[in-house]
Length: 219
Image (cartoon, rainbow, N blue to C red; front, side, top):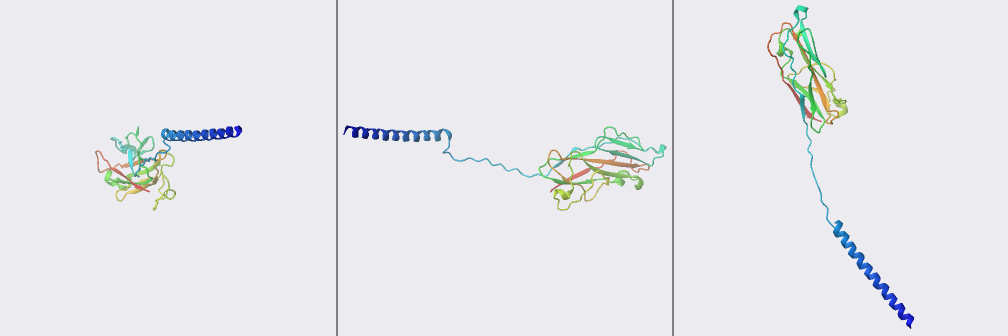
């Protein structure tokens, strides 16, 4: 009889321990939820980034200064050209020192095609004998892959222009000179080199100038 009573007391004690343990665990979970926020709601941060087609001349001026065709040396014209880093002059006394082409950078976040238009052609710049005059440009990739073939870049009407080739400037609709100028920092810069051929019988003297307009079309 005594042993049965002790057994009953022991069972009651064990039940009390389990009840206390359950209450303790519940309180700890409530405390954990309160401290860590595990029972809280979610928050969100949203931002919308717009696309932009944007190019800019990073070198926008080429000034040759004054000079004359070396007719006393038998020249019928003088040729002034630039490349990526320097200029050169033949048949005249202009200086090529420090002269370099215009440069265009893609400053947007879209690939673009680039077309150029000039306010003057060779006849408008110099007059004289047309066969002895020229006003041309060519395009060079300053950074590797700066100007891609339009087919490989996904243009709908690729011109597939050739880099490093001299073309007469366009004064009407604009000439596509780069099918695809990427926007990434490692391939977003091109150079527009310039060739001027001044005839010995030039009609227009004094300062002669042309405005080059660059237009970007998103691809």
